[in-house]
Image (tube, rainbow, N blue to C red):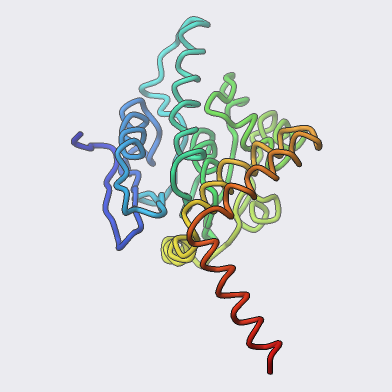
Length: 256
């Protein structure tokens, strides 16, 4: 597939996906969605983590309203489910994803950013959910992903008022895990991605697949699922090698 809305490259075992619609502030249209889906569907086996970044001064301005058309209820629901399907491929995909955010992270841009497992912002980053001011409703997963992070009450306030949260506020709320100086979010994201790839792939995969799902379960179901994830993760060759190395080191210390 020839990309026109994103660019892709690799740096060692790190994949780099760049939203590349700077003239549109990287607003999301169907073409961009399908290219993101294709990128994650065809991710090479040697890639152990992905960094998502954007060209231009804003991470993503949300839904491309110029290409948005009014649909009946069924059509609107199908469009939302398209977003859900593609964004699930990021959150529940094969490898961890780090988002490097700059400038505006608005509406659908927040929905995209919150699919990432680690989020790095810059001092110029800001967040908005403007759908309420536009007489529409979020449809790309915000009620689950954003609501899970900041809580239903604060998300409702963001949508009702169109309130803007700045970088430090976003960090305090959990929308980002790091705030870096302007122009350095991508460097920090790459540093974190490299660190993540030093983990065992199976351990990373179980963390990505299990933790948010357990958070949505009852305590009893969550604890049982945790036991399954732990049992599977420790079965990897990397886990066995790590345990043997630790025991050998501990044994030498005990003998001294």
